[in-house]
Image (tube, rainbow, N blue to C red; front, side):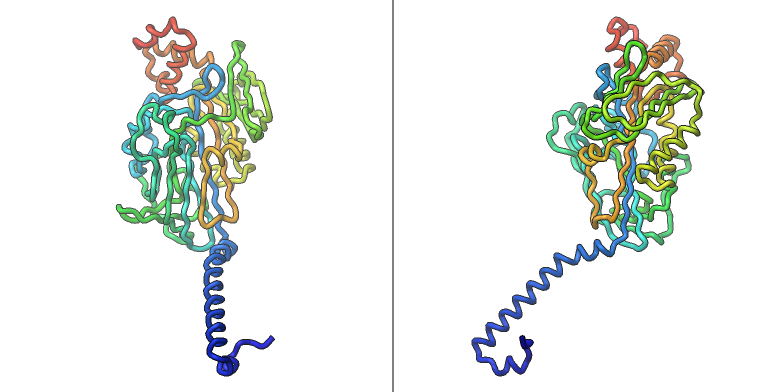
Length: 396
């Protein structure tokens, strides 16, 4: 077949020439359109973007073992002042929910500078804190008390223009007081730059928190004999579970491994060390796909909280459950996305009840302070388990 050349054009008649010109124009338009469709795919194939995320879902087990709605005893005071809030920090205290999503951080790894966007959606929830500045947070009004249970829509947060800058100088905001927030920066992730009305903001990750009224696929029920029955309520295997207890300076834990249906735990003997448990947890998190420095950063961030006074169950959230409860969308699509969340279920054991009740009677503020933000739900559990104590406990 001969190619279409100037010489053949000159020999063609006016009508044939017009038809050929129209055909050529249509072909050029089609090729241009296809180039627009294919160019993102070409860009994705050239990208070496890797995204890793970790975070915590915190809940409290009721008498039936399932997560109950609760309010913290006091507002959040564990974040630097530059972190942005939905309205103000006190707002979160009055928002009842079953899950408090704490410190998810999203890391970006790339060998070259690039622009990315990110969006997270929290089922039956609301985003309450974040940094750097977000392009959009929804909802941002009309929330109070039990409002999460009355809403039909999900909460979300989006960052539309984030620059991943591997070679950027890490001039990150840091306040004089030390804060667990900073431990999350100690990784090889690329620095991020976000422009806001207040100017350029730099960080090593995208950070956000929230509260949700969603249910969890696990229950932890305490028997009258003091054993703990843990049930998987989903069809997905829970990759790893750990039962932890701390009383004063004594700690203990039992590692349960993967959970398919049900496991029974005796209370752990208080003869272990935190360093040993931290090492075991870092190994578990790295086995789930986090880089070793990310696993270490997560454990260091939560070391003072996960291992405070009381009893709790820690578990790795199944990927299917995480992606349903908190879907994350990144553009351009990364070559690899790893998301590892640790669920924390606070347990109101007999030992916790006795310790709190005794401290209330003796006005032992030091002991009560050890239970921190969980003191209010512990008191509610005490009253529910023995209504005859209600009036006596309330006066304290």
